[in-house]
Length: 224
Ligand code: E4P
Image (cartoon, rainbow, N blue to C red; front, top):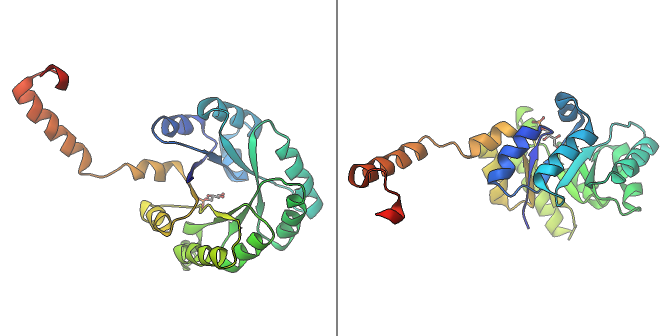
């Protein structure tokens, strides 16, 4: 089943889109949590009260050493939420992922800028892979191409990692990864807003309503 996340720790943003979309949960990174300023525990608790106990949360370790990442992952895993531990897909990060996976903790390999980096993380047992589409594009490379290559490698080698592309700046990037058939995406708030935005929609609805009112006034459909 496709998993839709918001890339935020902002409770109002979650409330807005949880009302109109089947949100699976939220993804965060240290910058996002720091920006919101209330800490992970309080933010997740507030967000879970909106989405419900089925909410899944992705939170990143800030430790730099392998031992530190493993220990921090265990502590995040013990939080009273459905947690996915985000570990950067570096040499140290992959070392930590192998150790963390021995303990059956769910892991997302993050900060993926190349297919080879994501492939190695998948081989190490990462449950999710987060290629950074817009950040790759911004560097003059091909973010969608990295996602497509990773999808091919996962399929060819029968790996279990789910693709959860992140870092979007426009809806075209989102549509391009959706067309590839990825397992999940995480949307920044601004891009989620844009997903609904088309200049033709509201004028179309306004015309329907004015045509109706000319004939039936304030009557509702079932009253006509
Ligand atoms: C998700 O794993 C990343 O932390 C996040 O999506 C990065 O997005 P940005 O490039 O918009 O900061």
